[in-house]
Image (cartoon, rainbow, N blue to C red; front, top):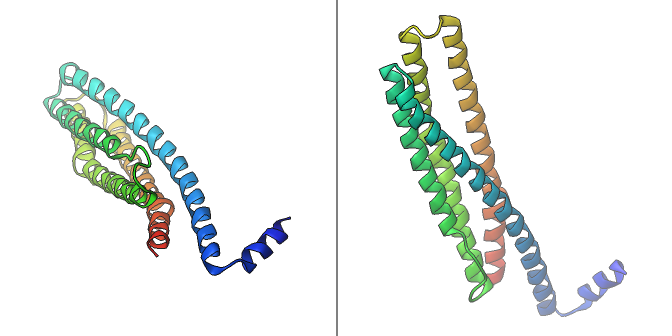
Length: 196
């Protein structure tokens, strides 16, 4: 049956082959976009919940933790979590909701959305390195210098922070690659086909 369909497709006029090829590409792309949007939806919800927990925990830490350095660190971590939460809310607003006028416009909106997501991931990756990670080290330094922990525990916390940062960085790089490979590249290919 499949061989017969292939023969029919090959014997059909070139214009019909192109129409078939376009419709197959559209269906494949729509399936990929649906899976990708589900992944992004759950990732955003997960990150928003994490941000709310971080904000609540470190606001409480501002009042609870006695060292001044640690209080300052808690404040910076809260600022970073609020900034990241606002980035996530902004990315939800950018998501294309439906196929309104034509499929080409829908693809272009999806391309813009994926580009925004990619930039958000990159910004969050660097903001974590510039603000959140130093604030973490400031927090544990405040605890150490106030004599609330010994040197062994302090060194373990430093290594924990470094390993968590490396893991977060690697995960973010994987996400950027996923957006590039499975999203933007496929959309660009389909837009090119649709414009021909």
